[in-house]
Image (cartoon, rainbow, N blue to C red; front, side, top):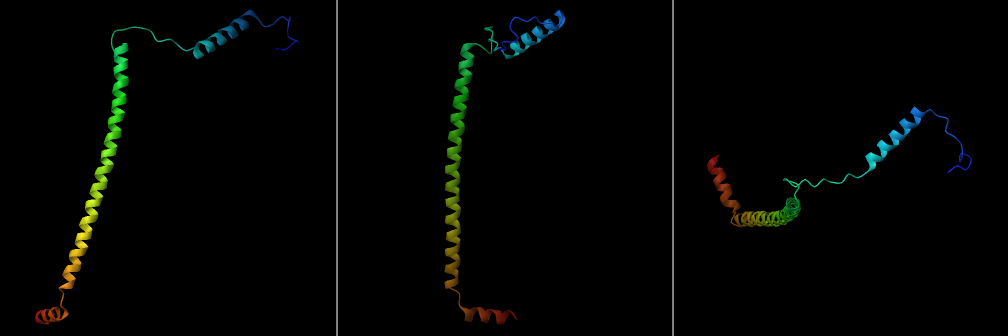
Length: 112
């Protein structure tokens, strides 16, 4: 507070003062937290609100479980693919061991 303003008279007109008070009151009403009315006829009943909270918690748990299972499945699939690739490589190596260059040349000469 300004000590020089104490005891002074506001020279603004009555209409201006009322408009300022109205604006301050409207601003205070906007900032005021409105209390929820207790109309218990349906979706906002205490039991239903509690059920919604429980449902949302369970939904989150389900999503987390699905994510964990998906990760495990992806890991298993990746492991299977890796094993398949390794088996293919081993099979290709086995087929190379039975490769005989002389037989291959004879086949090539027959074709030509």
